[in-house]
Amino acid sequence: MNLLEKLDAAAAARKAMLPDGVGAFGIPIEEVYSATEAKIGERRVLLLGTNNYLGLTFAPECIEAAHQALNHEGTGTTGSRMANGSYYGHRALEQEFADFYQCSAGIVFTTGYQANLGTISGLVGRGDTVLIDGDSHASIYDGCILSGAEIIRFKHNDMADMEKRLRRLGNRTETTLIIVEGIYSMLGDQAPLAEIVRLKNKYNCTLLLDEAHSLGVLGETGQGLVEKTGLLNEVDFITGTFSKSLCSIGGFCVSNHSQLDQLRFVSHPYIFTASPSPATIASTRAALALLKNGDNLRKQLWKNCSQLYERLKTAGYELGPEPGPVIAAILDNPKQALQIWQSLLEHNIYVNLILPPAAPDGKSLVRCSVNAAHTTEQMTYVGDTFAKLYQQILEH
Ligand SMILES: Cc1ncc(COP(=O)(O)O)c(C=O)c1O
Image (cartoon, rainbow, N blue to C red; front, top):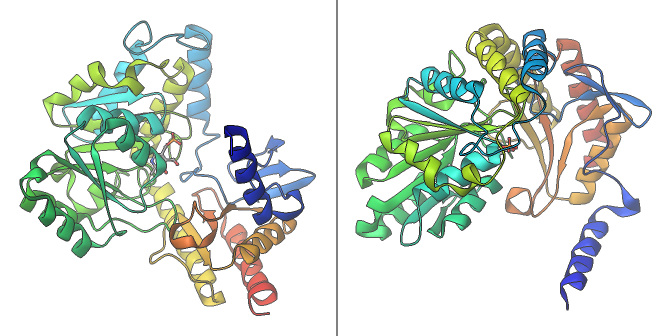
């Protein structure tokens, strides 16, 4: 089979899972009305598949900041952070992230994906080891591959399995980077950080925590799992993205280790790419200020999360182990998952469909992302629709 035939085979396998050319992936959004509503095809739909956890996509402060930056600094930096692409705003945002996490320094990357790629490949290399959760995001896997370090996976959130693998590493643990996530993007569950920190200290490793989905969501000021668990000082490196609670695009890494700055000189995903646009940086800075003081937003978000999680659970769906802004209905049968996804759209509800191999354990997911701007009525409508579809599709 040549290269193009291999792509044909992959396309055929995808089509077999999505009959009749159903466009479940990359669906065009024609117009966006608000943080919770948009136009898809001819429908006005409820958005339940965005990572807009604090509902800040239309926050006037962020829009105004972006306008100002566009007017004064133009549309793009046209260069790398290492050349002409480090404006005042990039440096200011790095300091604001460092202050937010009470760390000595921070680095801003062009995407969250690159924050993981750049941090991991800067920290470890050939001869080193990465010990990662089996459900890690692709950016973590890709960062590990780029680094050339040996990749060892432990079963998702399974601390006995993690310790077994640490024991096997012997004295190589000193050059081992453990990588976990605050909230996992597939099932919405949280890492058992206290136990991970205990093992990291026992075996003398380095720990990187990706707070992509937990920034703005967990902890009193929204730092993430480190704040919820009171373990900020036990984590060596924290990465995260601007594309979820901060509603723009970009990523960061913060640390108290003075060596963090060295990543700027060795990390290709930092050096060999253009820096985020001034408008992106400006709106992110405004969003970070709102996030820190976003206690009310977090309360509303968690109220919505609990309401929908409980409703789906009582309706009979198998869900991830705990409520959170990511609520995934877990299904064995991809056809049924597709049917539920399509029916939800017919009821004007947009959610994410995740089919194997993207979903863990060969399962299929119909995944909702809840946000602080959703109203109780919207949550009730979504919950009732899911319940009706359970009876229509899964009980037959
Ligand atoms: C856990 C995790 N880390 C990193 C990223 C990458 O962030 P971005 O999409 O902003 O590049 C994502 C994106 O979904 C993610 O879920």
